[in-house]
Amino acid sequence: MDELEPKEQNLSSSPPPKKANITLQQAIDFGEYDPKYLANFAEWHNLSIHIQWQLIRKALEIRQRQLITQYAELNNALNFSKKPHIHKACRSVERQLKKLAQDNEELYVEYSNKI
Image 1: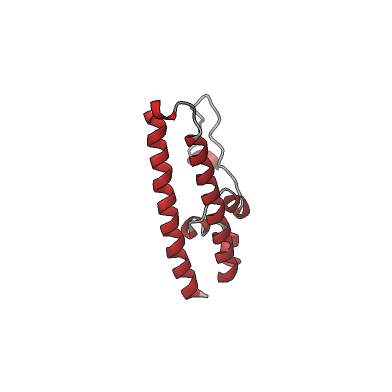
Image 2 (image 1 turned 120 degrees about the horizontal axis):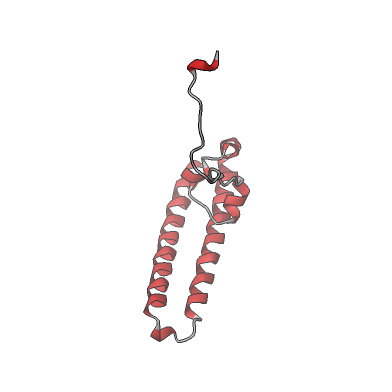
């Protein structure tokens, strides 16, 4: 019988948070290019190395576009010189762009050796 199984009780007043269910294509469209993250999608393992690389390249391009747009929006802020927090945010975007360029180069080398 069920007497030996502990019964679950929902002690919180709010419903449990829902997991974000996105597809591999949505992740790519959002600029997610890390192969380790993309490997969490079951369909990733069914793709050839060439297709995986093409999806990574697309995500890299999208991410670069996002960062450049963010940088431009920050630089177009009114009274930019009087807002040090915006200047700090610009430096953060610059660091992310440098990291993206480095990741891009490393992934080119990695996938060139695999193909």
